Length: 464
Image (cartoon, rainbow, N blue to C red):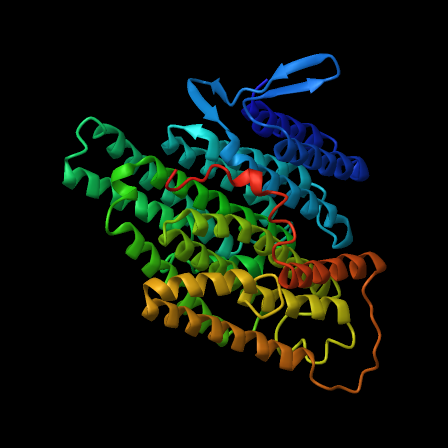
């Protein structure tokens, strides 16, 4: 038994089975959720490369597996990512029934997780580009609504992600050809340039970000949250593994400043665009871009503590995006357009969804006593110690994004003649309340789970 079989091929097989059983909605949901939970628990408690004991039987858990001439490897340094992704997926799958998402989301979502995990595990890394492109193609059916034409955001998403694949492949091919003579500076620069542009397109870095807010207005918020919550994390980890595996790149003088500059530009530009935005669905897209910008800033500082901070920040990031997606889904399900004009006084009609929408956006911004605040504060503190100008610009971006949230708050909480009457279902109220509570608890007690998962951070993909 090997970890790639458990985390890639097993869930992929389950997804194919569930796709054929779509008519049995409850069974598909149950199997999909249980599969994710069991795999996540395995990642948390089982040492990769060790022995799994089941009664009197012992099974060695290998970390590599060869398939079609390619090697897949998932070691202990991947345990946090695997547990995080599969627990998050269980939560996403668990709310599909209460917001009217098609049951096909579960098998296709499970397939996307498996393929993206394979992209992180495949060696050599350039084959990640092919697997990421396959995951993009699998995601397209989820983004197309029956009876409606394909939106510009979906088309741009497909075009940009398809453009990234040949750039990463060509850059990886150049890099592989000069491993024997790493002193060839011009070839190294060419390879780094192609790979850098490819990763920039993957991460929707400025100026390749226009498709993100467009996509969030055209597809269901829950599907947008699932994919945009998972995809940047995987591509970021692929980039981290790439940087970590090349000593000359990791120790170069330009990698840190370039990543810091790109991340800062993303934060500032996203905040300014969000400040003038009228549609909460586009704010959702800008929230994803803001998170990616902060991730790049943390990576740019190239230290173990900052990479650990980055990994732990994935938890409030995913919870914030999930609560935001669920709130938008409930609002749209009730036939309300999520624009500032249409949401006036909505706190009286949809109090739970309105509160969840505002709390999740405030958390992503880094508002005190919410889940995102400790990580925004830590990033600004570390950034200010090395580059005060960059820290000031990041603060400008946060302030601009906060202004957008305040505009939304003023509209939702504006007084109206309507009476207070919550129209959300009981299950929607429960899920939204739990999401708000989680964001508050993680903000007040940010270290509540840090010690319990410390063993998952023994190996980090930078400076190891």
